[in-house]
Image (cartoon, one colour):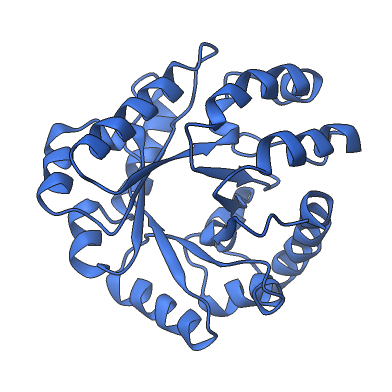
Length: 273
């Protein structure tokens, strides 16, 4: 069951780059009507008029876009293809200045790599957001990226910025292959648990693309129960992410959306109902 003290948001990543508010509502409106979701974390995709229209469309259904996910930055140790892909993705996502100028009533989330840039740090300090969330990037086996993320949170808090950490559970375990996550589930999450008290939010990636999501359909009920009780239960905020595969990263057909909706229901039932 949902912890009444925490807020659960859902990301717009499930509808891909060219997704619409109509598609988003098809997937998720029922959960808002049942008061399960408290709001939306919108991927800050250009163009500006489309992003603003998306917020207006959801507002008409009494659904609030609480937070906007801005640029991710570029991780240095990625291969050429992945770096190029990230650069392309970031080109289509708003940076800090654009978000602060056009969306003053929303909270913002950025990856730690993006916020290491001193120029961006100065922009934030001079013109603070409503709230800043910092998400960890891909992590090594020693969890140094988590430590780095927490240092950034501490840095901004000391500058008077309303700032909290958002731990992405897949990013934190991304040094493992999918089968290793399945086989070492309890060991990995026990190691991860000691960091949770320092993070106010959790990104929970439930999608089928297993190079960016937890293998929730490959683990048994005992492992799901551990995730629910030991990892998810204490978070102030949980954001359901749903990265899709292949073409659905860009757009979805009606059949693809129908299939996703059925899968979403199965996964969320296991985790929260």
